[in-house]
Image 1 (cartoon, rainbow, N blue to C red):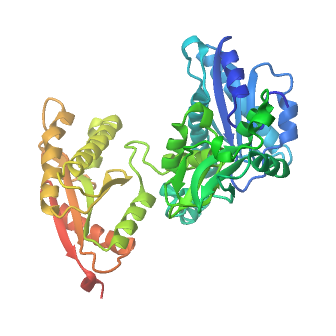
Image 2: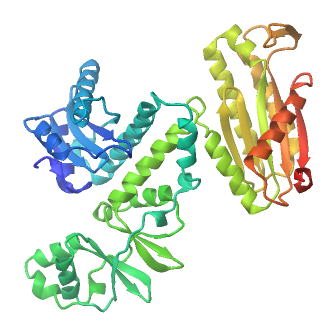
Length: 483
């Protein structure tokens, strides 16, 4: 298949892209299919790619397509080419039914390098960027024809641990050998297992190193390689410091460690351990696809204006704190008369006010001199949820309000208003927007549901908003209140 690579990361692909950069601009286009769709039609894609001199490199899995393309330097022409390419790919996917198939596309320019140098690490970075954008695009694409209840079901199917999915969920079995095993035994094992690419060298279950098919074949294929290495023990040729990750390590953290490895080890299998003993391995292909999916899912679930996580993340954070059985507080912050401000000063100023409020809340949460666990989420509109195990809820609220008013006057221009309008159009004597905060203090004595906490927060937000100006209301909740 020429331009089509069987390996996601290899020097041949890097060389093709580097050569293309010498002749002009290059971009990486990613196309992602939804889980319920059939896989990319390989034969049709091969036929489509033939005779395309602009296609430098391509890689395909069941759901993810990656293409490195020569691109016009002029932006309008580049955008037109992307639109036409995406349309052609949509038609290829939708040919069996004639329907327009949901496909998410993401594009990343391949950054210019000194002397056109390009590495596998740089290719991996751009693959991640394009794949994440494709995942986000797919989410938006599939959300367009959403039916009633679809959003709720999608949330329910999302694993509560996904934002911190552990590497153990991706691990599969991997061959192991003792350090004193012969190189000949490893070579014969690879010969008998054509789909396996790695062997973990272990002592008593503890990983000591890694043997890869490619590295071993390279040694044996060199001049005098067989007589030199064949009867040696594998501990003499193994990679002595392979990437080892505990089964509970988050996928995101392991992916970043994997990307920081030397180029020579960039696509080595990650060894997964439990209590220090080898549990299995994860290939870079699987790790990359999972990481890209997590990034796309995270992008979908954050508020596009503030970049803060939304409802699902808020729920997971509360549930995590409840499991710790320690006291914590939920702060429900809301802007008063924000609709009046938005109507009077414009939606752009309204967006700036929302972002300003988010920065105020975040800065106060980060002020504590003690080691605390804090979280800030954006429900939507002018509503925010802050969660913290800080004991000084009263002082925290005062800081929220003081810091908010320290900078809010700048949004009114030369004169601060004296009268605002409520949602019913009635006038209220108040100098502009204010901040109301409901605080629910949970003592950690028993488990409490996210729904119960949100009901208390909604009730106490009404109490805070009934007070003039910026104010707060604190509710000391306990297990007794639930009886």
